[in-house]
Length: 465
Image (tube, rainbow, N blue to C red; front, side):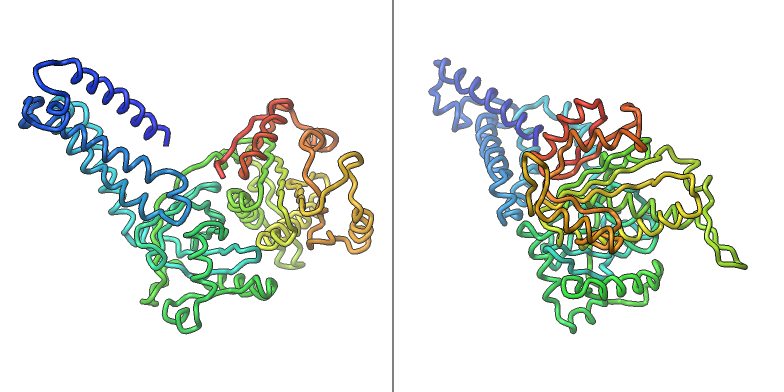
């Protein structure tokens, strides 16, 4: 976006300078200079002024059609097709100025080589051309797509991909964070919230898909929005039977993926104490990280053949990793919005509890902090009228009143100064140089968190929402 704006500004100055120059000259009229070849300016039949006018028109069309009110209001195809005018733009630039090809030849060669390589890998079944195995309709207008993982596709936790579903829009690619773990070799998963034109089409396409369509496209639709426990059980059974090289099915729901592309979340494993903060659907960059950590826990598990007792190979679990502590913070308006991600958090808590039971001297590796902002706390006392009830329930039942987690769901917005202070004191004490904060969510929320990070001298990383 910045490069496009910079080009537009330079074009304006360049055009105004020539218009002033044509107005000063007396050998021809200003109109003749601007809209004819008669003054014979340039190296291709005096076409330089006219090519300049055409270049300005093309650039204007591209700038207007790249505005947010075009791209994000159901007119992405307009943005996409008008941006293909860059081909005519470069041809006219070569005609417009004779020396231009000398400066453009090297970048254009690199560009076309990259485009050729991208198209080859994108449509190769070993890299980008694949199919959807199943879709889960989650609560709160969220859909999870399970995608057959191409043979040569590799990524790291926190990476994202751009996906194209031809049945939705033939040429549109949209970026989404991979929510599955790199250790899972059979499939990729992405979580998509229905908030825009294209995402709504995806959501309702799979939600309203008939049984005959699912059979025809050889995929399964899980309805977690109707029965989350049954959908979770079905997903687990399905994942255990997926085989990456199983190509017996000839009819698939086609999907094309580009990537992977790295993000700041990839740096989590290079930190000693990571604080992961997500607002709403902004939690997806950390799903893959937690899935990866879960896979590492399970890979380090040792089961005694005689007594079936469980232990962990600690050196394999933490010996080769810098990351020692994670605080996971999720802020959402409604506790129902937690349900699509609840299963992973619940499993991690159970796995961690098993690990701590056999390693009694160890501290918890992951602490979960959920904030439900649908009910606000009193600004003066920081109390909520239902807090006493939820506390009693948690003490008696052994889990949170809103979720099955042992971690308590907090009501109201987090007070970041107090929260950061608590996360770096007592049993959680860490040096400020060891703490890194990763955030993905609304920009206004990020501004507040960044201010607190500056105060506590924490490293701050933000992924654009």
